Length: 297
Image 1 (cartoon, rainbow, N blue to C red):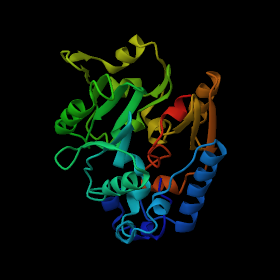
Image 2 (image 1 turned 45 degrees about the vertical axis):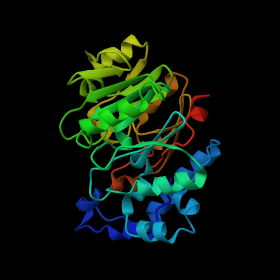
Image 3 (image 1 turned 180 degrees about the horizontal axis):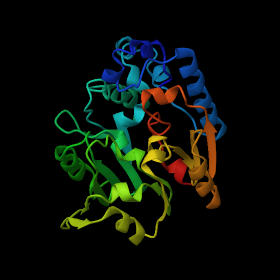
Image 4 (image 1 turned 180 degrees about the vertical axis):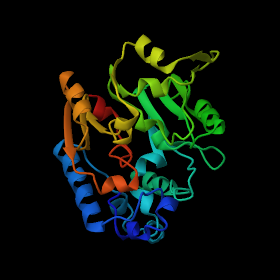
């Protein structure tokens, strides 16, 4: 994770679109809401690892971060797959090359890197999800390409994962994590109609690709689906961070979805996000889990 600092002041109302923000933000309020998020995570027993702290003595990294307001959205930079990290390939110029910071963190923490999707492959961490620890979903969206999927197949199939599911998403979709979120081994939040507009393809090692529909694939696996609308997805209803089975932390304001989660025995812990949402990211976007196993216990 990365606690936002003065770098977010780079964003003005005039250049906000260049940084994928909706407008300039109030730094004090932005940091207050982020600190509320950190407190929620710590209260749940989760240990936030902050880039700024790990790399506090790295002058090159600190100088770089000082003008990169999107670094707080660490999810896009990498994914923990099996025993190591996959460094993603960033599409937007406001994110391009940022993943080197995670490589530097991995070196500090002595964590292996399985592969690097860039520079020719494009796939961001918000574009991937785990259904199980061996079944991996990638969204074929505006910020991805087939080179990235081929790299994932070559590096991970049969080694770190058994199954890679590529879900083709409608034009204009940035990431799948605004529309699909597993929250337990047999429960997901999903916009069913949105995810089922186009077919998906399932890859397994030493097997022919299988073409099907993603919702049917989920149902065949016996997954319960909490269906959400497009509007709810835009309000981060599928952008919680899972801190345990059916235990989620997210923005305030998704009362219906929270009720559905609680009906199924889940817990939802919320915090204010009216200022943070101006960066067009939610709690899921602001985290890059380094130890997924703890969330599945």
